[in-house]
Amino acid sequence: MKRYFGYGLPYIEISDLKGKLIVVEGSDGVGRSVQIYALRSWLELQGYGVAETGWTRSQLMSQTIHLAKEGHNMNIHTFNLLYATDFADRLEHEIIPALRAGFVVLADRYIYTAFARASVRGADMKWMRKLFGFAIIPDLVLYLKAGVETLVHRRLLSGSMDYWEAGLDQNPGLDPYDSFIRYQTKIIREYNRLAQEFAFEIINAERSPERIQKDLRLRIAALLGIPQMQVMENLSVPMTPRPGV
Ligand SMILES: Nc1ncnc2c1ncn2[C@@H]1O[C@H](COP(=O)(O)OP(=O)(O)OP(=O)(O)O)[C@@H](O)[C@H]1O
Ligand SMILES: [Mg+2]
Image (spheres, rainbow, N blue to C red):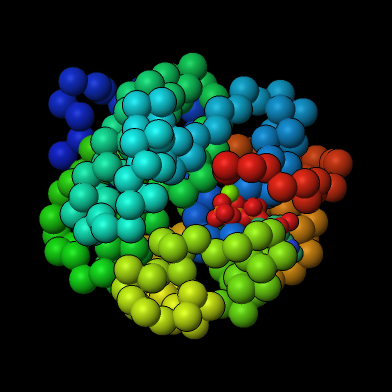
């Protein structure tokens, strides 16, 4: 039975939602997009309707957030209010309707991303939890866990580090590479703490894409009641970059 994380949305009853909400969390560049893409194809082959949703990708807010990020002068409260607006729009227009229709919803990041980023920036975490109290508690949180060296490697292979993922707002004047290491180390520490508090399923993401995919599928199969032998079907993970996701 679905429950809200906090106060919830008083005008939407969620206890009867049939679908499953599965979150994939993890640091910038850890490999969420390639894994979600492969999970989606696999789940569809198993006969599930699948909907994808991603942090900051709402119709209402994605462009605004993109523009705001270009400015390099947002503080953590502005950030969180933009995030919360984006999330509210996706919850009402994407996530809840899909769950009501019995879909599996794959969420690329969730409120934990906001919690980790806010925490390392010294935000008031009681306020944060109230702000995101309208979130639905996911059925499963899959945390792709990797050390900062792995992240640097994958980020450098896939392009350059942007201002925010290098945490340059936290380390003004520092070399972006050094700032990335310092900032992402703190984010990883925070994710690891959240993993305990919110019972994430921890997936070692420092392995081959197929090995990670298999682990993710095993956890999802257990949730959905998919027979183990179907976990290995079509285990390839296409590594083509997917711009913007
Ligand atoms: N298991 C893996 N081993 C090696 N490289 C990987 C692995 N998974 C992903 N990559 C590579 O790392 C880069 C980042 O992958 P991807 O875009 O899926 O990450 P992401 O978590 O979605 O990143 P972002 O935070 O930018 O959305 C890509 O170049 C991808 O090919
Ligand atoms: Mg991505």
